[in-house]
Structures are given as structure tokens and as C-alpha cells.
Amino acid sequence: MYRRPMPWGWWWQNGAYFRFIVRELTSVFVGFFAVLSILQVRALGQGAEGYERFVERLGTPVFIVLNSVALVAVLYHAITWFNLTPTVTVVRLRDKRVPDWVVAGAHYVGCAVLSGVVVWILLSH
Amino acid sequence: MAESTITLDVARYRPEDETEPTFQSYEVPYREDWVVLDALNHVKDQLDGSLTFRWSCRMGVCGSCGMMVNGTPTLTCAVPLSDYMPGPIRIEPLQFFPVVRDLVVDISDFIQKLQKVQPWIVRDEEKPIADGEYIQTPAELEAYKQFSMCINCMLCYSACPVVGLEPEFTGPAAIALAQRYNLDSRDQGAAGRMEALDEHEGMWGCTFVGECTTVCPKNVDPAGAIQLYKVASATNWFKSMLLPWGSK
Image (tube, rainbow over all chains, first blue to last red; front, side, top):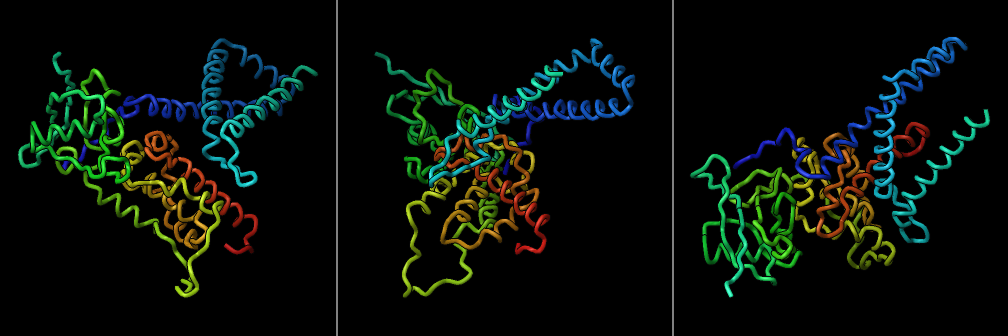
């Protein structure tokens, strides 16, 4: 019998594999944001001066570019994940499956509400 | 008017002559009412009797004629030639399976994986035949019907890169079939199936590429079945952590 070896670049084979690999890779940026948030809390613990130094560093071109790339990657990750949620979350109401767009839509609405709260907190201080 | 034709580039593998597959081109008549399988049968009947492939019902029920058509796992009896005009059409055996000859793959590994999930109704205790059948309401039927539509065509295995990377992975159809029986009101075997699948080679090997669901000709949604299994396993784990005194 002939066993075909798995090609090294299998994710180039079709668009779906490629989009999947990109989604997996964008997890790195999700992790990056998480680490950045932890460092921010640590800077807060170092008092006003320490926090200012942290904010200053975030304003350097390197961090602006890095954060912009990370934002795009995390948005891609979030959107593709929200679109997959109906497959994971099967909700039944009165013996009928809640339509996919309602499940995915609820995630978008939840995200928008939470983002709104964050923006409100930032603007009101 | 000259009869229009279409070219099939078909993968050939003759283990007695070749160490790896090669391609052979066949020019077949283009007919609007033909599916890809009809074109292959034309080759077999009129051009080259040595071409080997599986088929049976030619109506999308038996699940025998799955092949890679232009790189996509496809039931060749279910796709019209017109979808691929003007051609050529590249036809290969289902990927991630060992090739026996030409377009025929070895499915014994898949059959073993199927058996692992006990795809039948498991009862703690069978009731006597005299007591009659197990009654089921339309709603109870609806709960598992989608997953019961699987015809074991293995297109989902051929679409799943995890199957290619980790041959031990139980795979989409077998896990979907496990769900089919778990969700059946007559079945009591869910715990045994969970034990067989709650491991890396089982449900946790799945990275949710989702292509199994895309290629499924019967809309079974194996990707959905696997994710539901993961949710159930995680829920069990949390329950056992929070309520260690509760029953398993």
C-alpha cells in the first residue's frame, strides 16, 4: 500500500486550512495582550512614577506598531471565534434549536456592551 | 457539431509496477446529465478496464465513491461534470488514507475507530421482547437524527488535517456517531463512550478546523458533534471538581 506523506506546507492546500492556521497563530497576540496587561498591573504597583514610565514606553514607535499588529490579529481571532460559536453552543428553546445568527449575534452584542463599559470608564475619568 | 469532451487527470497506482502514484489523462465525452462517477465509469467501460475505483449505489447513499476531486473530498456520484467545465478534472484517492490501488483506499483503520465508540444502542439491561419496542417521541428522534444521517463515506477524514498529522485521532465521523447514540433516548452507553473518547486521540485531538462539516454530503456536522463532546467533558470535569461527593 502507498502512504502519502503529509506535505510540510499542508496549510497552503486550501483557503480553509490557511484561515485556520492564521487563527491559531493569532493566539500568540492574544497571549501578548494578556502579558502586557499583567505588566501594566505590575507597573501600577510600582507607584505613579513606575506607571508613567510604563505608559511612556507604550508610546514609543516600536510599541505602537506592535500593538497595532496585535489589535488586528486579536480582532481576526475574536471575529472568527464568534462566528464558530453557534457550532459549539447548541441552545434549545421549546424543542427548537436557537438559530446560529442569534448565538453568534449574542456574542457580538456582549462584546460591544463590554467595550462600551470600558470606553465609558475611560472617558469619565 | 463536434462532440464536446472533458479531460480527467486520474491518479493511478499499480503496486506491482510503481512505487508511487502517477497521473493518467483520459478524454471523455462531456454530457450535461453526467456526474463525475459516470465519466469514470465511461473510462472503465470504454477506454481502460484496468482503472480501479469503488462505487455502488450512485445516488449518494452507500458512501463508496468518495474521492479527491480537484483537491476536495467529494462524493463523485453527487457532483455533475458541468461543475468542472471546461476541465481538466483532477481525480485522486481520498487523502490521508493508504492507497491500495488507483483510487481505492484502505479503510480498515476507520472501521476499527468506528467500533471503538460502540456505535450501537447500549442497554444496561435489555427488556424482554414481549414488553414491546422502545417508544420514542418525534422530539426524541429529532435530538439525534442529524447525526444519524452519516453514510460512512469518510470524506470528513479526508478533509481533516489532524487525521493526516496524527493517524491515531479517532476522527470526525466516529465521534459524530458516538453523539448519535448518546443523544438517543433508548441508549445508556454514553459513559462508556466518554471513557473511550476523553483522551488526546479522541475528542481532544480536534483543533476545530471545521472542514469535516464543510465537505459532509449529508449535513451531519461532525465538527459540531465533537465540540459538544468537549463541552460535555469539560462540564463533567467541573462538576467532579465542585461536587466531588456527587455521583460521576
